[in-house]
Amino acid sequence: MTHTSGLGTGPPGVKFEYNSGEHIQHLSALIRALTSEHYASPVDWAEDQFARPLGLPGLFAHDGLDGDVSIGGGQLMSCPQLARIGQLLINRGAWPVSAAPAWPLDWLPWATNKTSVFQLVSRDYIREMSRPSFPQAVSTYGLLMWINHAAAPDETSCCMSLESKGATRRALFRPTNE
Image 1: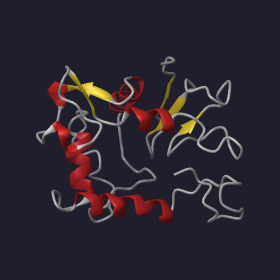
Image 2: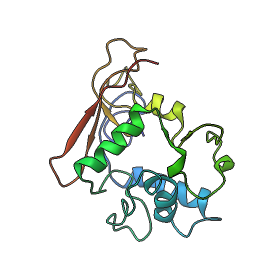
Image 3: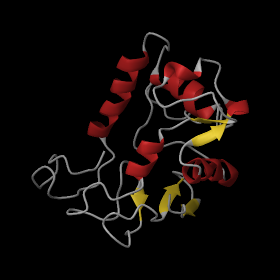
Image 4: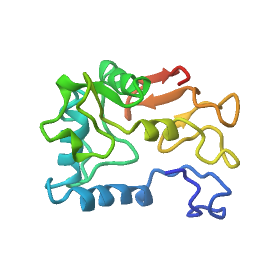
């Protein structure tokens, strides 16, 4: 997820080499292994647990990987749809309960049903994805997310950039400090 695995020309953890190819698709296999008891495919899981609660049904319909999620991108979104992803990041993974999926909210370890919002994505993951993952190798990439250079090594308020594949739609978000 940090593109410092050593699968490129440099040793692991030393050189950043962006590649959204085959090796990153192992995350879809991991999703399949973890969710196969409840879902027929990673796309079914991603639609139910992520896309529909965000109001983005069909988000993974064009991935074209026979039920696997295209981890490196490929989801087609309009500008308003892209803004929903940005709002989720600004909210640090929280989303209104009215949009919650039908499953019990305690199914995921970070979810809660005690307030008017639930943690659709772990707050800790949002924090980690939005800071440089290997600052000694690259300061512009988090965990599967392009970011702008942070002001200081421990800064977590750098901008995040989202891009909808196949289009010129881009969105920049700058969450406030926690």
